[in-house]
Image (cartoon, rainbow, N blue to C red; front, side, top):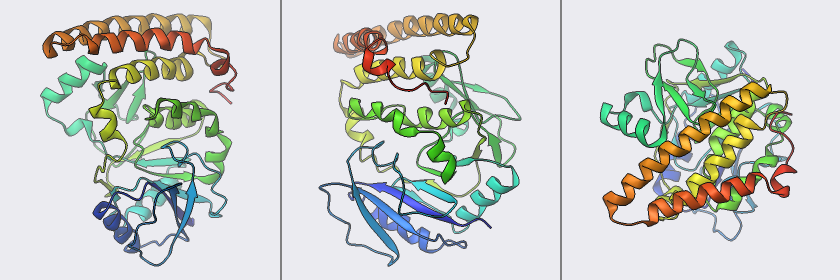
Length: 323
């Protein structure tokens, strides 16, 4: 079985959730060669230890703490974890076996189970985000030309191919991770909260011809510490950041792709225009319901600023999404 190491990003503030994660690592039937914890500069190392982890202080930021050279790790495989996941005893073994048996370059644990949520919530995310279910025997997540995704609503096997994935727990071939030049995607840090980092990272893997898998039965549980996303969700400015970042992500991963024929770009542009109009109506409704114009104003401002930023020189100088 191919050797692996674990890399965890943290602020050191997850408390009991982080303790549960370290304990679950200690129980793995296939033990990692190393456990390296990348903690943000200025934060204190947690007191609890399992005796084998190493700490490395790096620049703060969800992307900054993930897109790293990982010079401290020399195994062929690297498991990237957030600091609020708990592994089953055989989680590492299952992920490695899936990667080897299905010739995957990366396999992510399914930690957000959209196919199991109530029908009312499925309708809600369809209306508010244009996220729909699909029925496929091949794909877990599909990314569409308007930047939205769809999810498999009829899961009948453990592992599916995917065009994007969940971020809390994933196993990568280290060389593939480096070959993707994910440092080019650090532009996401400019928003304070890197909205959409998962779709950008994992879709870049897929769009560049690598094989991405999603494992539905590896026993990894997301404890959801919300150390960064919690503050983001409480801030009304999230409507601005979400519309701005979504437009920029669409442009980067769906529209401005090297080698894509003109008719596909036109189709993609038409679809994003329809999406923007639809979400304008949605945000209008939310503003009326909450009796505040801020929601709609933030949304519109985000779209306008997003249009300006995708044409800015700095953004256009970033190497193409297709390597």
